[in-house]
Length: 307
Ligand code: FAD
Image 1 (tube, rainbow, N blue to C red):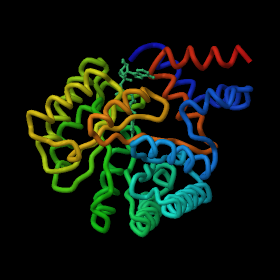
Image 2 (cartoon, helix red, strand yellow):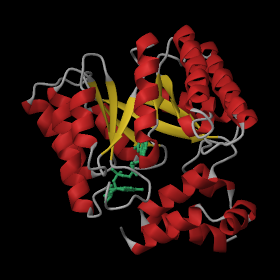
Image 3 (cartoon, helix red, strand yellow):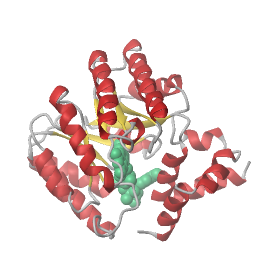
Image 4 (tube, helix red, strand yellow):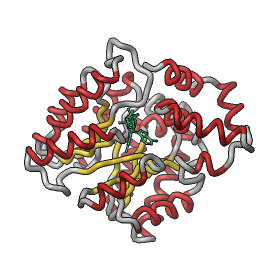
């Protein structure tokens, strides 16, 4: 892993740095480049503007690693309010939600996470939309896939996420590529040990291509989450060879990253879903985005010192 990436990911877990950044006079605009805002109304406003441009959306209420059942309950309530808002504003056909199980109690008790995620799924069904379970660090992969299987028994549309950097993922893709199965393929965003993850970024890219092939050959609905121009090109080419029409898979990108590319792909007839995070707990998310790209860090630091 790039030393700057390791450093920023380490900083993301450091409480002193967390307090420093969170209380620094960071301009609203800097955080707002990657985060829709802090409230449900902010999230809905950004969703509307993206949908108006022909994009679709998945919304993430920021928060993770909750070890407090009260906080897990607050997260569930935030999702329920959001889903009601999407329905009220006629956005539920174009916008779904992404949920981190660690934010709804996974670290406390898997049963609690299932119960909480089920409440979100039930409301999503009522509102006419879907839920995708984000994937977190490798210690949670098995638990998350177990929870997914349980939820899919009632709501077969619950989306899974797999991370190409994990050595196990190609096998997971083959297992998950069943009829109707929505599977997001991403590279993976956590600092992982070499025993479980490919340390060399080229190996991660090669794994991404193998996994993409497995998903495109299967019966499910693949969701290719990447900003990597070569991978986008390869996915488009493989989809054509494997006779996958636009609409039988989608591209996904993060809010604020390569917005022109999002519109270009949508203009070609692809479904493009933008992952829109919102909420007060933006710090960990922002640090992961900075770790991915030195230019993002430079942008952030420049904005800090230019105040
Ligand atoms: P990178 O290797 O980061 O970037 C590749 C190339 O993309 C760069 O070289 C550059 O050419 C281009 N690029 C990247 N950023 C920019 C930019 N700001 N401007 C211009 N070009 C840029 N991770 C998880 O672990 N679990 C999840 O559940 C999860 N969900 C995700 C959902 C979505 C919709 C997306 C898009 C990502 C998700 N991720 C998740 C994060 C993912 O794992 C990666 O960390 C992140 O997407 C960066 O990887 P990348 O594929 O974009 O490639």
